[in-house]
Image 1: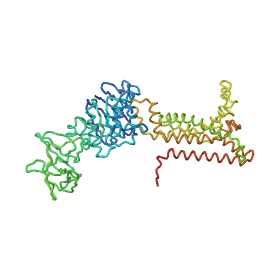
Image 2: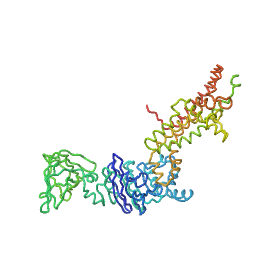
Image 3: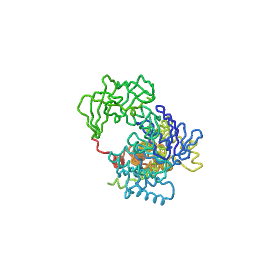
Length: 349
Length: 229
């Protein structure tokens, strides 16, 4: 459990966020410099907010009004740094021993030895961190954190330092470790795929603020804001004009696409968006169906991307993603596609 | 060869002893000062850093002037120290150590500081969140990680302390067998006796020691110096 309200003014950058999470995986999704890592450092206590309150499992870590500010040592949190921060002059075993918080040296040694086995580091106890592979380093760093039985676990871009093939394997390993961990986990990431696979809930960060927040499926389906849609992987956006909502139907003109679109129900918003995968080949009678020019094609590993535009459109072309294996696009100049109403999103800027 | 047989070797011993003791003093004071300065912010850091570096950029005679101002038996503090504790700095080996320490200190301090600044701050954060105490983080994480930089600082400090002349001659004087260091021996051999042979022997010894020290330092820090061109 965590409840956090953090305000810190760095002059050129201001962090102002509020969120809570139960014993689940909460992902902080955002671009670099959006304040995600800073949030983790405030929770860990190595950085002090100007104002706010941080409570983990009923223990007040920080409260500016009550003048409470526990030291990092008192907070007992586990934070996995992006570069793992293993102590380079200590062996793996010594590194893990530093994470054991109680007991005499002998007991610490035994706990660390047991952790070596548990985290698949058998036989590597005498090695130095620089002698380990990236995956082994990550396991050692996780072992060092988890032997201390932390109240909360924080992972700062945990896979960004790994090669892509290792990344998938370590992601699975970390996820199975997280299953055994009963507290709150906060995952910081700029990868929407990683977040979607690993997290239960998401907070989307943008320039020091939380832009959208909630259960993962909810946030990905209906991001609510332009930034959240962008960060969750949406590629097609258009400003809109002439929005009317009458008789249970919302109509508007998508300026950048030069399309007139309708959605059942009453909606408001200033930006229209649709994910490239949600555009479909039009069948006769579909609403929101248009004949579009194909201005370009990109072949991706698992899909084709067709770039579409309506004559007279001024904005960027619309990306239409077609998985390979489904009927391949023909080498033609135009195509008729439909924008399903349930996939069209109306967003705040 | 007769010269070597009759040579008084005491300057070598005095210089080495002075260098070793001054280096030990500077080592701990330098690490301590570097740590404190890095915890300071902005302007305070700039001013304190400037003061601590001063002995390196000023003529050693200026340091000698201040040391005499403090420790001379004709000055209040020096007199007090001698009467109350029986400690005499002027014209003693203690003066050699003090002068060498003051002059060599900035080398240790600046090298330690630069080495500490290279230490990944995440290591310190990790230590804190893992529950290590601040002294434990400093001695078990920061100092070992900054090892090569600290080692080269220590070696340079020893080299500087070994060859100190200006402040030493003012504070400790040149008493043969007591405060007569190699550098003072070279100066007096020539200026008083025109004895280029004795002076030359000491020059060769000093050059061998200095060269050895620099090579040692390159070997200590050499692991990181890959061929670049």
